[in-house]
Image (cartoon, rainbow over all chains, first blue to last red; front, side):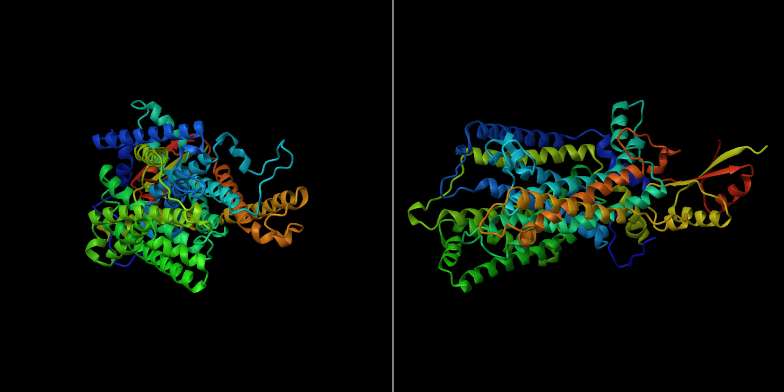
Length: 457
Length: 174
């Protein structure tokens, strides 16, 4: 039995019992969807279908359908890729790193954060696939013996590191998620009435792998979770470090810096937590989980956003300083051009949304307000998208040869694919919120007596 | 002739169950199984379980992943088709190693995580389509259930169960 200081705020509000937790977690699965769910779902589905159409158009006509040109040959696709991967980082941080640190507040939010991770990484994986132009040849990226002679992949290339990092990250996240889901699927299975909904009962019976909650199984479960957390923690840091090396190992001014790996990892955590907040503030209302996802959880996440936001800000300033201090003319121009060139507005949005507005979280009133947090989390999402856009496009659009300097403007296909991935992401998340146990209820029950409000009186 | 019985002691509270487990085991009565809706801290020790070897397996699997990854890269980059890429040393594995570290790490994690999870599922007999063998569906919700096999005298065990806080005791012929 865990003991906890009395002055700590409760994490589970309302006088809940174990049975209440089961009931509340199973409610969205057992009940019918409300009006708002259908509205959001239809909207997401429409966006998703529009995205599919734009992807089909790209694959049918070629990458020329995008706004790319010979100077700016990487733009929205890689921006979106890095943005989605970054969003994917908070899930593993919450479920793995916070598990190692024994942070109990992770328990109410880790399931959804990990769902967000998996869905985010799926969106990210779409972009390299589409950018290949001929996605049916995607297996070329894997080290498989082939009939084209010894046409092996290049293990010196960060792009190949990316293939390994992201596929490992995605599959380990799915496994970690599913190991935790098995007992919760079993709980839903055991609540289902076989005569009223035989199909559903069978489905959850299938998904729960015959889990029954034996003592030995729980012992193994805890050890496996701990080891997976231990494996996922360095993994999550490695993934975005490797993504940053896609840029850092090149010799483009503005990309060729050693600060990139930590800077990208922090940015990823920053944007990931913001997206978790955006999703959870809506979800707690839509599926009535106000007792479990409380303002305390939001405040803890805001503190992390404040910390990572400030560190990201420090990285921006360090980058500026180092470009001046390096004495390299091209490096200096790249940064001067970022801040004052034709893309100054993108730089300004990035600075405002990532460095300035998160500082508002120093104020307790803002840090502990759902409305303010929701608005600021959207700001962070926007700011982090622009960060990647600034890094990628401003470094490319004015290259070594002034005659080839140009600007980038996205075509409707670029925009359509980006909107499509947002639609796809929300479609998956909305489906998840109606069919999965959105809170890790078995874990949550272990802290009811130490962190439930009626036990803390 | 002794008749074999199965006793189900059902508890509402994990602390009551834990103290009951200790009490019963100190009376030299064997507990067949305990079902609970969530992991109970200290229950494995109270039941006298050995430590699980999942972590050791993960370490072994990680070593396998690292070795296989190294072997794959060695074969592809050094033996089968060495290429001069950006002037990086390409004739020995040792000199080219720094560039291989990320993928060696990913291979280690990939093997350790997946094979350990598969081992866990196999050791616990969890697979799609398997049926739960819990005697009471409430054990995934809010009830804690203890299974005791007896031959003959159930009254003394029932007494201990009641004394230690069991809210329900069911009996079944084996």
